[in-house]
Image (cartoon, helix red, strand yellow):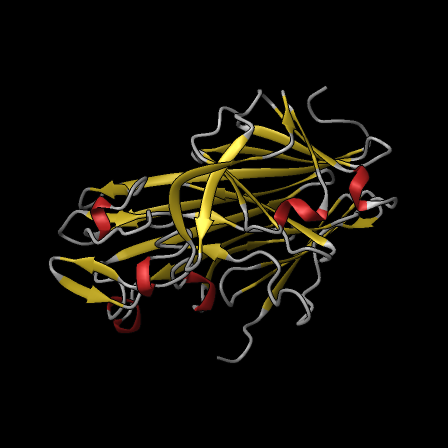
Length: 296
């Protein structure tokens, strides 16, 4: 698929860009710094994909609906689709994706996914609205997957930390080959509200804080400079990188990957949202850049 148009935004010295391909957030310049990861084929070729209608992997890359099997793999298909612009301003854009024969061949539901992007001098907000435009119950998950430069404010990557709003459990599910969630857990170096970051903690896949207590967190540099993340309508927090890669993804998910051995219907997949015909749901994340910690 050829690259789509890019929409640029400005507000109070901050700048941002969003692509119509996948509705992907491509750039965020704030506080005199470039904060978003720039794709590098050596590590990861995306910046901030939108996840829909699943988050994480489906078993064997397949989903089942009414006894039929559909090739719905990692994070769904929205990141590959072309969105249309329905509203546009200097600091604002609203994009829309509707179902097509292509999407219905892998996800047999009628839907609308609207994405609102709003830039200010200190923040960038993304709001996703999912609507069931069909006549049957529609299961879905939605997620945002932005990658930030790590380090983003100089210094050593090992001197950065995540500070949660509330103390989180110091363990996360073990993710087995194929991206499936094991019933087992592994320890992470979380101490109360703080998680010390080091490249090696991502050697065994992402850190998935399922049903997290926190709705906000700070990605904090050694001098206190912080990328803040404040979520609405997202129960799960996911942190992902690759050993040696200069980025950290701070992801917000409503759902997660299939459990190991899962063979049920898509609507029975854990943490899926079921929308009645005509129903809708919204989810939002506000990202901010500040010179001091977000929470402490």
